[in-house]
Each structure stands twice: as structure tokens, then as C-alpha cells.
Length: 177
Image (cartoon, rainbow, N blue to C red; front, top):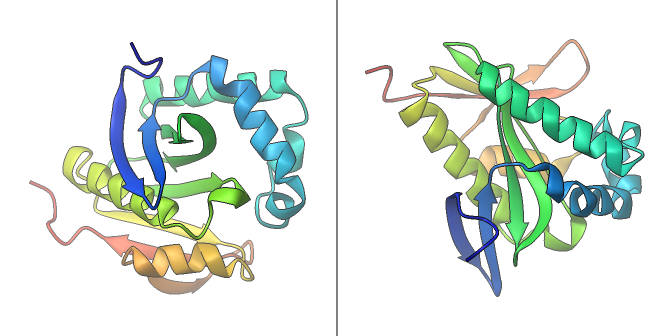
């Protein structure tokens, strides 16, 4: 039996099998290793990246994600590439109308369509299951790869937010049911 019995979404891109699964504390070492391997790049875009400086802090982060999911304020998924935790995607700051999309992916799996497909799944979940009105996605002004994901996924550029990030918004065209 697979150690991932609850796969929420799976797809193939190129020669890679990708699965989106719930975060578990036993994934912490692999996720921490990916963060450390990509720390130079990630610290340019993600304010929290250099704060996760031990496996225990990754475990604590996963526990926080799990609690926020129980509380209904976030929805977090681990991105498995060929069965290895290679990144994460989430909806955070959830409320009855909206949520904010966040993600990261190890550099050796970027530019393969993995993140765009993962965002597509998250959009569908947000609009069809959670019945949200809109999603927000923020990027560092120089993170062009992330901006391309936003554009490919239908998000519309709204301007610069108070923190100097580019803000993209996607509205639910179907509306609430």
C-alpha cells in the first residue's frame, strides 16, 4: 500500500508523476532538505524561507498547517514529484469570500508545468468546494516565474500591494451556488 493513501490530485508532466497530498509531519525532513537545497533562491522571494532552519521547525510548521486546516483558515498540500516531497501549495487567510494562494517548488522541478497544474487544482477546489468569490496571489516584483504561473492560471494583475508585492486576483465566474 502506498504511504500516501489520500491523494487529492495527480497528474503526469513529462516523465514525472506528481501528486498533491495532505501534509504530514513525517514529510518534514524531505521538505526541509528541499528548502535548504533551494535556500539561496527561495530567500529572494519568500520572507519565511530562512526562518525554517531545522527539521523541528519544519515539523512545527506542518503542525501549524494541520491546525489551520482544522480551523478552516487554510488548506495546505504537499507536492510530491515521483513520490518525493518537492514543494507545497496552499490557500491561506481563508474567509467566506476569499483566500490567498501560496506555493514553492524545488528548483529542479520548476518550468515543467507542475506549479501551473497545481494552481489549477487549487482554483477548482476553492471555487467548486469552498465556493469562494475570488483568490489573491502575490509575487515579488522580480519573481517572473511566479508571475507567469499567475498569468497562465487566469489571474489578473491588480497593482502593487502595501508590502511592494505584485497582486493578482482571480474571480469566480461561476459565483456562489
